Amino acid sequence: MTKPYRGMTRPGSRRRIRELTSSERKTKYCRDDVYYEFKTLVIVGEYGVGKTALCKMIFNNIDVKRVYAPRIWVSMHSQETEGGEDKKISVLKRILELKMTWETDAETATEKELSALLYALHLDLRFKKYLIVFDDVREEDDWKEILEDDEEKLKEDERWGKYLSDGFHKGSGGRVIYTTRDEKKNLANKLVAKEHEIHRLWPLTDPKSVWDIYEAAVTENGIKEPPRNDKKCIDELMSKSRGLPLAARMIAKLESVFLDDETVPQKGTTYGTTASANQPTSE
View 1 (cartoon, rainbow, N blue to C red):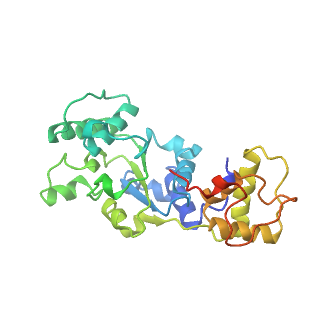
View 2: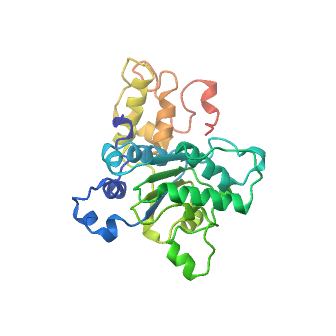
View 3: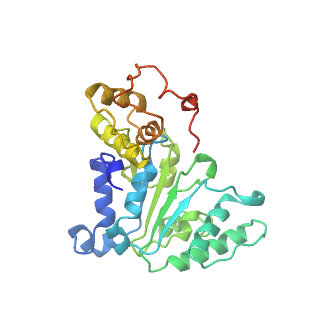
């Protein structure tokens, strides 16, 4: 649904979406040197600000589907690495499994295996305009690299087949997007070559946009009675959610929030009336 995320695509986000969805007819992508250029983007923001939601909007956009194939989504922390396997090898295997070009086994993680996986991925993505999303990348994932061109690495005498980026073919207009909660952008700076490839996603500042997200979530949760949308309730929701879309949706799951027969809670009180509302939300 589009409505729950209304207001999340701020001007910078919309520009990024336009860049990703532009076709060859667009002036910018008519030039071969740009159209076939490898590009990266890191979306930085705190938990609940809408990084994953924004990427899903891009990933599932009809124009993106027409331009990019394959499209691969990797949830970095959806499952634990088994048997102490190297994280990079685990990620590569998961990508290749999604592409159905590799069968995992119980071999010990070695540099030789890493190089083989990178080479397999590189060949598989060759001449393809792919889109890969790495959702929720963290510092402990040990991605100590910059996604620069292979030629630049060779100039610096860096051995090919050592970094994850070696698996991304650079000559067909591929795109890689990362999301991270790294507030200080230390990790983000390691993942991209240029500062402008880092996009900071901030909480919403428009109370009406936050209310629209909340109201849509209330409807999704099967509450037929519409919430009272006077200014006091809208301001209270903004205060409680801090402009975070996920927080607004979580508040909507509580019982009878901001309904006509309820007394609007004062600032500083806990969400809703149930004891469970005070429990932190786990990822």
